View 1 (cartoon, rainbow over the protein chains, first blue to last red):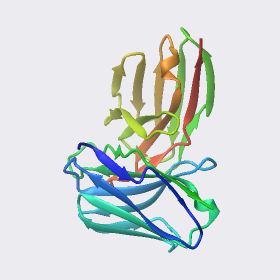
View 2 (cartoon, one colour):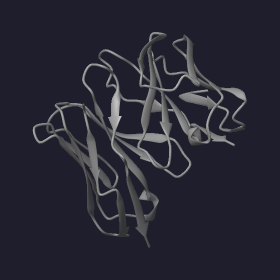
View 3 (spheres, chains in turn purple, cyan):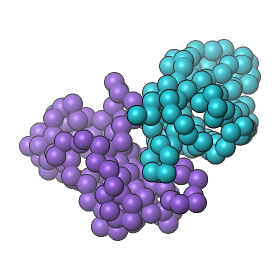
View 4 (cartoon, rainbow over the protein chains, first blue to last red):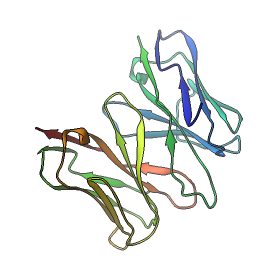
Length: 114
Length: 111
């Protein structure tokens, strides 16, 4: 596999469920990101990890819990979500330092909260 | 706080016509990116502009960057239906590897 892979592609969950989104990058990058894209708002940065360390938490509610066990994998753990959390969740990766800073995105996980 | 504004947000045009999408940003940056998103799909990188005066072209699309004016343009030449998509510009916040995105321009090219 190449690029950035996200699973599952579609997820439907109730407000009391616990689920996780997974992202894996095969680009040798050191930085990984979670973005939220909903119909009514522009692309929102949620979390940033550089070399497995979280460097940004953009005021995201605690019902979203990220995990980055290594530079190639990123998870987003979901619990007690609200219907307004329904959105497309995009994972991205980038190199750092001399790299161009270009983000490479996965296909996204479409989340519906009932 | 870096703000990125695109205009127009919606653009409907006929095949064969030319048009330009504008991306303005509020603070100094010399890195700007253009992405394309098809409905239900992810974001695909189109152009990476890394210096003042940078110009890149791919097919019917050409992007340029003027860092002094804090402006980038995405010019569409002789549009075709396959260009219908949403186009986003994104600006680097400077040394932090984090991009701030515009709201996107939804382009519809009609036959």
